Length: 458
Image 1: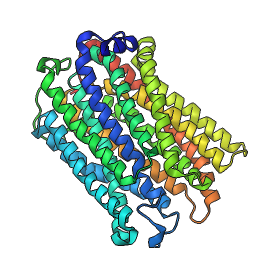
Image 2: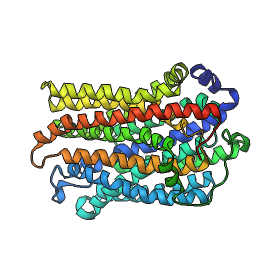
Image 3: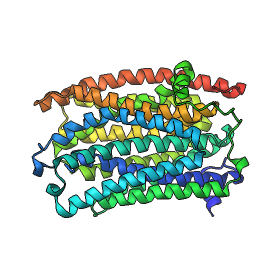
């Protein structure tokens, strides 16, 4: 039954691929489900005043104004995580590192859950102003680092055990299964239960990652856990990945393709959430609508469009689909704002439409394509360089976007802040996308040469 369904949507997948791909997809399902639930919950600390309650003397807008700072500090948190991660990659087998990562974050989020339980049961004053503020920042940085570490490591694990041709057949299915998890995680925001209970669900999903990896390692033969070629084992070094990154133009190109969209995306995200606040829309409800809509559309595209796009246009063209769609949507948002016909409510939903399209294109098209860029590379690139790009690079890009958005705010003048965000923010975003398109052209051509020649970047 399962094989028939998979072959209906993905006719190129071979029978011998199904077990391995399904288990990897299940692991990704749990990872993305947990991440999307936590990703949407973390903003509640800032926009729903969980961390900055007015009952303890905070201004009603304190959380929104504090968010750019949280994003700016995030890369430094992730930098520490990357240094530790780079060392652990040399010390442990891949599946053991999965166990370490999921256990660490399960414990940390259990502490956050306990604090939220006390807040919901006994009130803000019992915990105090400082503890709630620090809990909000901690939950934000834990979620950001977990999303960077766990998602990046999953793809490193998957790429290192998947030959090129098998990747083309199976990665779209893995992404589709992950999108089912993201839809489920996002929709949990609609449940009429306390926030701390939703954190408990996220912890359960992290435990699911642990169990899925354990089962995958036990049932998939070792000969089916290898990529195109084995690469020599490197000497342990925390900085070898950084050296590779700055000395290989191909890897620098992947850095741009994998991270620059976060700069423009963070600006649009801040535009959208600022309008939601001004329009008086229920923030938790809006977050649930955004997360569910993005992931339903991503799932549909991953199910019906990703494989077809790869087959019809090839990897090089597919790398350009995401930046091109982003540029079109961002231009449309800028034109709509400039028309003078918009209201905070209308702008919130217009920015929602931009985020819906570009996020769906990112998750369903750009993500599986950019992961394939790592196949003609060594183990150090797959784990260390990829870790730096996805963890530190991604968070640094978000911090850059948050810094730009924060600088465009005008203290005490909301109208001027919104004008700067939509006028200057959109122009800056379009300039960033132009650089991104140039990098995508270079990386796509270089990847095609590497695959044809059989060479690897090491």
